[in-house]
Length: 146
Image (tube, rainbow, N blue to C red; front, side, top):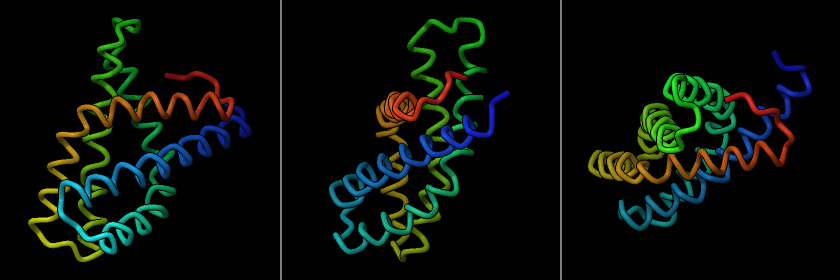
């Protein structure tokens, strides 16, 4: 399907995109909506970096499969692509996010609030991340595959 160099560029692009995007959006959600302190949020964001490095490429592959499934019959419909990005982002990221918050010692109410807020905000975040991911893939010269 792809050459080793192409797969490496794809993994690098997906990793770069997820680490940057999740650091920024996670900190905003945690501090503004969930009432976490700067220290709690920074701990969460720092812990999320290695986690995001590990899950970035699998998430990119998962997202591409969801995108292909949802847009199979009508690939040109942008609202279907947006829906696929939303579904992929929420279904993959929410459990990972809850685990990160639990590990850094966030309280149950904070975890529920942060993950719920993230799920609601993901209606925009997942779609925006899809565009950001595609942008990063173009920067890394990754062939189109979704």
